[in-house]
Length: 352
Image (cartoon, rainbow, N blue to C red):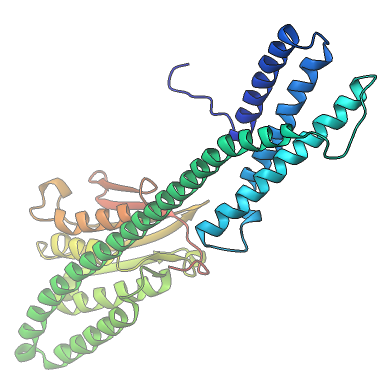
């Protein structure tokens, strides 16, 4: 069988081995000592009973040994239980033997040296099986702990990478706005003051929301609107913007600061290089279980825009960390230039 293996439960495997041993031993006694057919059945029954009781004790060892965590005490308990299993299996064998043999008489604990033999057989086979199962359990526990630790490290790595992406967004934005304010201070102090107030509002949003991986769509839109209002002061009539959001989407969650790099990129390449009639449009729609985010602008084609890839790459990296294999990011130039992101809908009550 290629690529597959059939794994048998240890208890069933041991029972089958006991049946084979009992049958072989019964055949040996039948041909050399006792020609009664019942001898074979009794031998098979004997090994089956003793083997089953032995595996019952080993399989449920955690129940029997839960009173202590000391390994030496556990071993004493298991040896005692294995001896009891051998004695009980022997008594069952003698009882059935008295029924199968017409002249047989059942006598309580009348097996003599048979008890000693069966106890030795059970201890010789049962203790190694018990030790082996304990090692398997310990190894499985260590593997699970390692897997859990790896998962924790992956989550920490993801969180760290997200923080790095956030750190790249805010300084870049601050640099652009700083130049705008510096240029307005002497030319139009009122607009410079308005810009400072908007900047303060923007960073109030970032300070309150920056630690969260997700926040509400309504919060993300407020951040984008504040940013675009600042750019509107900078470019005046050269720039227009429009934001359309499905009302049902406002209470859903969205990755924090996922739109700002794209909108900033749209302003940089869609407004700065135009003398007039520049526009930026942000749309958020819902389609069954997905959220569609479209950001379009009047700038040149994406492939012909030098340096435009960094912001988009940061967004793609962040989406890859949050939605591995479960998002799309489409860049389109004709007939309209836009960036469209499709992500799963995320309800407000989801922790993130």
